[in-house]
Image (cartoon, rainbow, N blue to C red):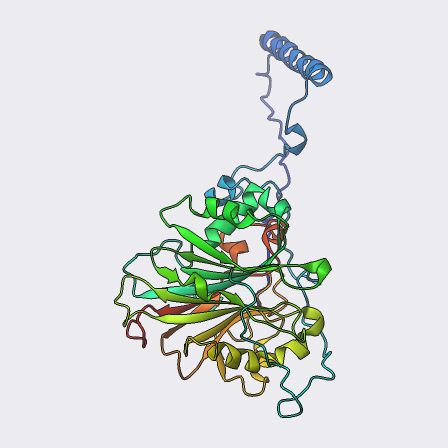
Length: 402
C-alpha cells in the first residue's frame, strides 16, 4: 500500500541587517538627496496601489502568493492541463471517499444443484448496443507484439466532470496508455458524453473508438459500462456486444461483454478474447462475488467458444477475497495492491484463466496517476477515487510474443 507524502523544506528565518561602524567616514549629507528621491518613489507607488485597488479589480490577485527563490516548480504536465488547486497529498489518509470493502452481507443465495439454477438466462442478449511495474508508455507502436488491457472505474463520470478541462485531459492521458480499456460508472443522461471524451482522447497520434452498453442498475442509480480501444491495434465485432441477462436480479449491475481481436496479424494468429466488464455493488459484495464462477461459465457458453474470457472491473474486493470464491480458477493481474487514490483499498482487478490464457506476459500493475501527472490529492479525486489497473498480453494467439 502506498502512502503519499509531501516533505516540506527547512524553514529559514529572514536574516537581519548588521550595521557597519565606519569610524568617522559616515557622511550623511552626501546621501540625503538619494534618500529623498527613494522616499518619493515609494510614496508614489503606495499611492498608485491604493488608487488602483479602489478603481480596478485585478483578476487572480487573491491567489497571489510569495514563493522563495529555488522552491520546486510545477512540472510542465501539471501546468499544461490547467489545474488550480494546490492541496497537498495527505501523509496518511484516514478516510476514503472510494467505496469501502463492505462487510459480509450474503444470505439466502441459492446454491448450485438445489432447485432451479439462479443463472438460467445468463448469457441471453438483452442489448446489442504495481504499482508492480513502471507506468506504461503513453505511446504504442502498431507493430508492438504486445497489447495492454486496462480497467478504470470513473467514479460517476457525467456532465460535471466533462465540463472540467483538466479532468478530461487527465482522463485522455490515462486512456492513451492502453490498447483497450474497460470503463465503469458512467453516470449521465446524455447520449454523447463518451464521444465528447473521445474527441479529447483522439487529439493525439492514436485513434480510439468505443462500445457502450445500456443503462443498468437500480432506478435511482443507473450507470453504463463501456470499452475504449485503439483502432489501429484492436478490432471488435459489435454484433457480439451484449449485456448479460439477469432475470432474478442477482447482481445490481449486469456485466457488459465484448469480443475483441488484435490487428495487423493473420486471423489465425491474432489473439482473440472476451472482456467481461464488471462492477460489484459495494452493498452486496459477498453475495455478488460468489456469482463470478457462474458468470464466467455463462460467457464461455455464449456461442463464440472463446476460451480467453477476461473479467475486469471494480470487484469491491481484495485479491484474498477473490481467491476464496469457489470454482473460480482465475489468475489475478495484481495481488494485494491498493487501487484507490487514498491508498487504502484494493477494489479493482483483472482476472483471466490460468490454463487457457497463455498470452499473459507477466507484466501488470496499477497506474498511480496522482504521481505520474504530479497532481494533488484533491485534483486526483476530481478525476476518480479509483486508480486504473492494467495487464499486458501477447498480441499473438498462444503467447508467442513476450
